[in-house]
Image (tube, rainbow, N blue to C red; front, side, top):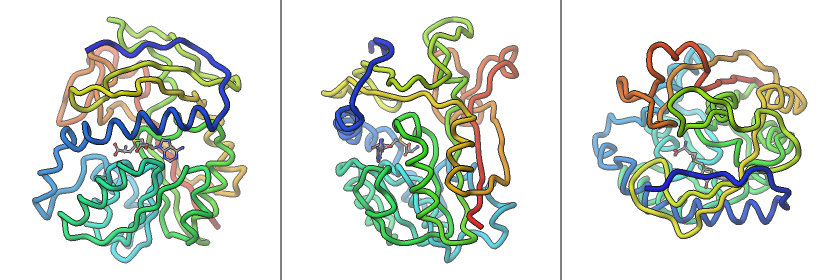
Length: 284
Ligand SMILES: C[S@@+](CC[C@H](N)C(=O)[O-])C[C@H]1O[C@@H](n2cnc3c(N)ncnc32)[C@H](O)[C@@H]1O
């Protein structure tokens, strides 16, 4: 399969870029339904690896557990993480702009015998589209680089939380995203800082499965950690924890090694770059 290629910075209208991204995400759904290992969810004890990690990270902040909590999962894709929270006893609402992704999520919920609500919307319009408040707003692994305006995103998060509610994000670290994943050493190639433009990508493949998409062009927006923090603070949230991790739930680079179902750089490089960041914030 061909490598993803970037034609670099482009000026593009948000709605045009978002529509191109949505077509690409719609195309990925059947490939991910095949590749995400959905059969594993037939075991009633099975949780996604992502939620197993995140539930443990959230435990100090939600000591009462997830049972009975109202959870809103932003950019829920085909629902594997959303429904893992449902399995932990939460009332879940999954939000995504891809209708095929939500159809696949609803089919998985039916197969698992779980209730869930699914809302089709641009995440930047999520508060009005969902129209209720939650104890936990959650988003993870492959989210904010798809968004141009982090302040608008953080405002949605704040509006979706009830007072006392918790926000949690774990995502790829912007330093990681600056690396050229095709090189045989750690080489920075892509922008860390924002400049008002998108990075255009062409990739017929996707991170899970071998098939190809009909709409290979996507647009992403690098956001430095300071922008994420400042967007959440600006929306009135109180940040109570940050973390940076050395492992990823997907193989970012062919050079990454699989260890216990996660991906890491070779040992001598493992302390050189962060792979993920995590932020926990509270609405007072
Ligand atoms: C990498 S997935 C993240 C989900 C999760 N980590 C997983 O693997 O199931 C990214 C999701 O973001 C959604 N997405 C991208 N841009 C969006 C937007 N502007 N509004 C709503 N959803 C969006 C895509 O449809 C996709 O389902």
